[in-house]
Length: 551
Ligand code: NOJ
Image (spheres, rainbow, N blue to C red):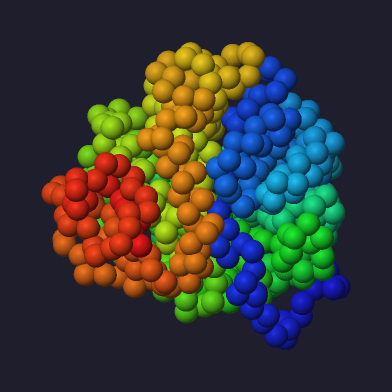
């Protein structure tokens, strides 16, 4: 650790309860698929700038940009070759600055992705390590060994690749993503420079990729067979490359850097939001005490089937953890790594509980209408829960997973690394439909880097803009109410008695959410007004698969 770090004795300094991100709604932009300004079929930063009005109209507080750094795209940009630049296919640093400035003018903060577990095999330090050979100081920045251990890549296959001189390097993801050695001072210092580089450019914080894995247990012991997860089932047992104690000290040192920025655009205190799957709340607790990370994503709802009881269990566990620790766990229903909500909720829910080999290949019946209705109800739940929330681009349009991408068009390395037993994550990364009735639906001028479905004409932003019943307008209305309503945002909730299959909670003052997960209409809870409903109500009855905000 560098000299100006917090020492182990530093008193914990919980984040301010009023920190902006505690109740922020953050919109995830996957730049490659948001909007294409230069017509090359891939989205870019000028594309994001050109569509900023979509985000102001939606009413989000911040955007999180998935990686736009120079990258050979072995893993969609999560293989970073240069942490302090913009890949030419996405624009240039000047485009990034212009985007941050334009967003700030519209009161939208910008969070960037930092990928500290691994870089790209094209990163100059990794190339230098390969060139320098075994035993060189250059190799010490990575994890080279003469013999591999039994670790498996999260993407499938071994976590080690052999280089021509016989040594093996560790990559917990794709072979194009060598893991850094976080016990090397060069690595620590380099990432401190990276944080400062982007903070100097006015970012409001960082989303930290695989924030639980940076340090590996000394000696790299084998994992206990069976304790690693599969493609859609993150591991739940302690493994020797997760949650090592040094992480806490590292994140304290990062916090100190972030806190030293004044945030003259209203961005202070800067946010760190950690991508971290955890099997048990005790694994998460140490990070939430407030002297290091600002937030951990609350991923629990993403793998949860459409069931009142199962939703409630996840909400209770996450909310309890946030209350007990004083930490912040924003809610998430979708991102670029999981199948879209409309599709998850539109299949037999036992297949969400236990995906079969057929499901991993995208072969299942999907009732898109049912899934859409449930996804709309889930959106009202998401935005009524205490704390912050993340919206993945396209969820505000009710996009389904695109399951019919031809194999030869697939880009996600998981497809090949799982020996084609899992179709991968491309289906939720398809370029957004903006207008028109056929691909590329106003995304850009050229063929899109992933094919878009032929039947998305009714899902474009233009098609939904003036339709009061559209999913886009549901999100807009919900966010507009959320901004004004004193009960919404951070705080507490009180569960209300409700019929089986129904979730109902109150938030003070004067707000009630109800979602009917069941199969029969149920009476609305006592109320004065219906603020918003995710679908048509039946008089004073809440139909199945519908959510409502009451006051
Ligand atoms: C998590 C990211 O969300 C995912 O897209 C990526 O493949 C892995 N981390 C590896 O960086």
